Image 1 (spheres, rainbow, N blue to C red):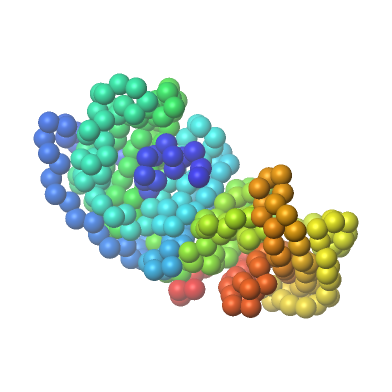
Image 2 (cartoon, rainbow, N blue to C red):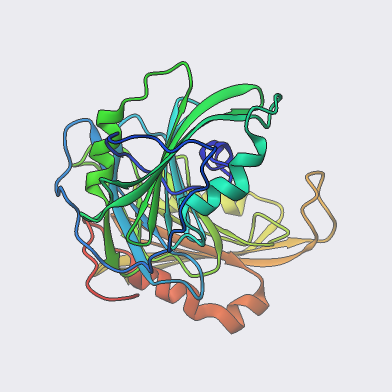
Length: 352
């Protein structure tokens, strides 16, 4: 998991918001608050301002909402991860933005259950400076709950702010000695939009005119994460890195990968087929190979057999690795992933 999600304790959805009104102290019990069901709503401010980039956060749960949150984050963001209902976007330990679709509890309840018991206890678990308010500027033009606090994580104090409204939670995490940049936080807050459909953008960084694709990750796969210049889809519970998916908007020549595979002693049945498929309407070549391991590796990779399939057009590469049994029963998962890839900026019009 990314550092941001750990710092935020329970993967709070990121929030940037203005600070107005009087804080409610711990001595008073937070008023009861309901948790709104998420649904599509437009952003208060559209467009991508200078110094920010647009990112997407899909609900990856199999029984989830079928929604995606669109928002902007600071250009300095380097790390991006989606997991279940939540996403994190961060830059090392400097700051992080998180968003959660359909949080299970209100911020008032989260404060009471997860923060109050640790206030001023000392040590790495200490929480202090807890402030809770209602009726602050929220998401989609709706008033929100706001919760701020300081937390120690591995001895490092972090300042956290969370805003929750319209079935979405947004959080902002900053090392306590760093500027809090509430103006930037407010830019992010006003950019939050909820769309129908589930999509992820790859990459979540780089110049606006640079190579990028969007795609619909399979549901309940685990999580999606930036890895180098591509996006990797991790399979929950997989015993090996050979069970995975990947989407790459800047793929090197497929012939180079084929040559490397033919030199690998664990690889057999390398096959390169020209024009075997299409990605977003473009002709694509397919490379397949089989990995056979007869014993556990020094990295504790288990023995077994896996088939890897790579489809590549001039603008994108989509690959998947699975056991022969997986390919027999779940081939449509890969086919649906390939069919979902869009090479240019995406627009969601229906659930995927």
